[in-house]
Length: 376
Image (cartoon, rainbow, N blue to C red; front, side):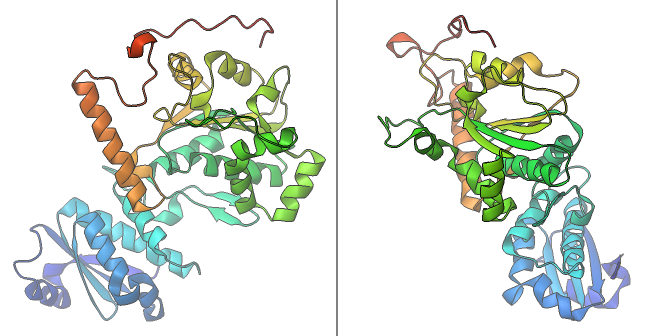
């Protein structure tokens, strides 16, 4: 590694100058100095007008000052350690010939917020390798999720929008298909309208269900060239189908993903889970705060989690607000909605969007599911 070991600022003349220049401004606590050997990488590490250092300061609650090939970091000991690990991980990324973007800096901040042991440097974290390159985690929850995708035959990914639940599942599916560990990929979603009444859609069956499945197509095209996706779909190696088409099938030697699983009923969820055949991996993703089922209908995803939690061989990852990797405003929006929902729960009020019973009263018990006369 080309980064020299960090030393206490009090033993370094240069660091002492940095501290003197910032007297009264830096929070009390630890101060360290990092020294980098390759000056050519520093403009990429610091960003235009040191914007990456500024963002690290804001995100991690430390003070940073650069001079030549050295960076002084001061603040509370735990935060300084996290900032040191983040900056080291980003520098290692540059050494491997990769770039450092704003998204990479945000990922380093999220990863370093894991207490008490920051999961850095980023180069030591799990990655999913496809022929288009490696896909790495951008949050602590994603790192845990990727570990589970590699170790468990059935994985549930639960959490808010923008956490990468579906994207990483598709990446793992593509990696296993390209490595010959599965024979095909099956992607499915329940065809449920998100609050609107779309009426009768024009076209044949494929044209009717494609709008519901578009996010899965988008993830596939990010992982593979478009012509390869079309070719593999033509040969049946990749299948994208609504959940209703799963009944009666046995899915063997396949990687199967059920997206938007919060919009399944308990009967549908049981039907899907029991499609699992020899050599098959299953991933079920969903967001329990965005249920679009009719009022009073219990979510199959919630029912499955209550039933299967703790069962050997099944992994469950629960993402939180800090795992949102879309635009920073998305994390703020998700956090605001969660705070309001928590306040409503504390006040004993029904949450916005909660399934309700007759006359608008919230149900305390879900209605019994109708008998499935066709069997699973």
